[in-house]
Amino acid sequence: MSARPVGVLFVCYANIVRSPLAAAVFTRLADERGVAARFRIDSAGVAADAGNPAHAGSVRVAADHGLTLTHSSRLLRRDDLFDFDEVLLLDRLVASELRRLTAGSAFGPIAGPGRQARIRLLASLADPSARGADLDVPDPVRGGPEGFLSAYRQIARACAALLDDLSVKT
Image (cartoon, rainbow, N blue to C red; front, side, top):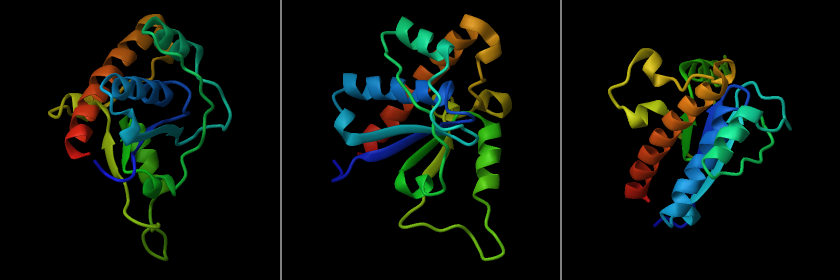
């Protein structure tokens, strides 16, 4: 076991729907396996307005699965890429935004104190052969309750795979 908790950050677009749900699911899975103390878990958004609560649909689907989702949105900071060990992106649009936000400048690449996080698409953990749209956890907002349930199921599978992957390494 490492001396410090492994930092795990889930990132979606606005940090009110998918990433807070993923953080809650991962937290519960880690707690159920008795390894929660090994992790520091958070979520952020590449275009978040700070301080917004979780979307009602995410709160509802979380409650339907025994989770209490209390959340206050926050914007992803470049420092997060060095403060966390693992950054899990919820879709390819977020990955594109992250590349744009972290692109180097005329002065060179971004740098931070220490090693940069490993950045992965969350859905790729549940299905390593996934390509294209299968790498996305679609935003369920326009999909109604069924869209939120589908997103929850996809997130839960991927978080279980992530926990398996990280538990081997911690």
